[in-house]
Image (cartoon, rainbow, N blue to C red; front, side, top):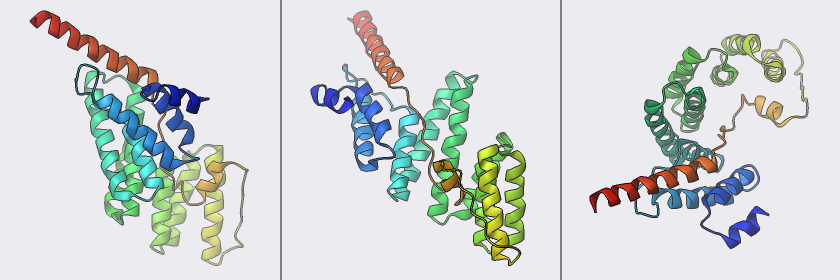
Length: 240
């Protein structure tokens, strides 16, 4: 249905964003194209006023680049997303939703840095996230996976146990599975595979390797464009 609407109104930002969200996990190439088209429309309003794309969309473009293994491009977008979000936060420091987005973007950037073999930089970001949100289970999982990859089995198991102590039920299952696999590597007991049938569990085996998307508000984007156009109109009227 959205595809038909888009064919009729190809410059509808709201439709572009909604369809891009739907295709993130199904057709990342198409989703990326739709997000980029939306950004092009957002950047220049009807009155030629420059508008920055929302941080959530920049994050999702970065996540799609990461999915497509374009890690350098992903890094650029994650950094741009956080910079834009910090700018937005200056105007509303009490917005808890925006603050949570910062954590998501930093986590995505850290995962991207791992892919670029910048492991120390990634660990710095993970530590920073845990200082702000100590129950962010994915960071414990990543520390455990990094230690495992260095052959530090005991340290890895400590991180996974820490994740188990702070994680939710689904995460605990994932951590238990990882811990059993580590014990198997060390020759302690047979590997145990637990799968509750959810995609998140399967991701948990690798310590949640996928980037995290943010749901952008297409309506908010349109409102921002409209308000910018109105501001430009008022300025033109007052200076005419």
